Length: 472
Image (tube, rainbow, N blue to C red):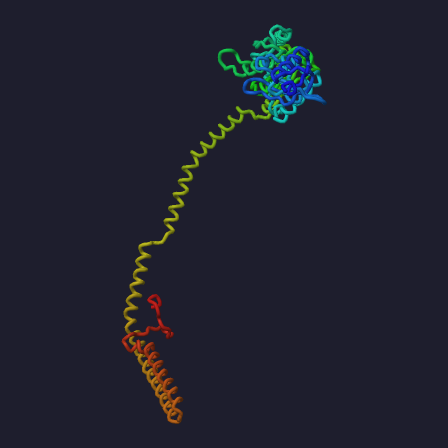
């Protein structure tokens, strides 16, 4: 029964762990150290420091990992979309039944990959505005200290020193850095930031900065295409000249620097002017200035001569003025007494021609007194005569008015006697009463009534009333 349950077979039996271990050993023994070319994708850095990614091409995808201890000496920073050549070994991962590439070194897959990465970074930095010309500043005319960021063992620093000493000796401050390799970009960025952070006191702060390197391949110049270097150059407040490679080489630091030089020697020539050129220019300007001053002085001297010829003889003018002054003074001394005597004689003649004022006033006073006496004597008689005439007129006016009012009453009575209609009689009586009242008012304002109360009406010889004291 036991033989029926367990059929006999010669196929070896493995556990899962044994099989995974066997596959891992087979992979590691069959692919000891390999180089794989592909495009980086799904790149991610974990908090532990390890980097996990995948390499892909048109037909497959391979998982890869870079341990934390290898990242520092990897040679580049992996980015999605960049084609690279990864060097490492194949191993298995039993927990996921997968295999992966343990990367020990990574490099760009040819010039095309480098150019593609540089172009991607350039477009991104351009969109941020890091390459705008408005951010650039002008170079100083004659700097006192020139900072140089380059290798201390290369020929670049010697060319820069020789050129500066030949053109115009200035102080050169070197910050030595590696210009290619794994840590070159970080060291170059730190040097630029260090120069920019120097205080005003202590170590002299450069007035202009030169970042230079000799010629080389695109891989050799990649340190100056790194984002950390470009951003450090953009943030630098010191005017910066980039001189990386030869004239045909272009790096991203050239776009962000304030000035680009084709060679390190040209950078030194841009940093300081030629002393001989400055002296020649100074002499030329001095000669032009002296010539201009001579011409200006000649013109002013000519104008002054013409003005001098147009001026009068001042001593003669002053002498004539003094003579006229003496003549006027003598004539004034003679004319004042004569004028005073003439005025006195005219005053005497005028005073003799005036009438005797006291006698004239006395005569006028006697005439006024005579008129006053005559007026006092004639006024009572005149008033008495005018009063009699007024009384006569008053009697006549009063009698006539009473006679007229009586006649109106008689006629009104006759009319009332003839009327038989009661309303008409009442209306007539009302009119009669109104007429009586109007007559009484007329008598109250009559001038005869006023005269009857003792007042007098004074008239002139022609019979007109005198209404003011001046008319009397």
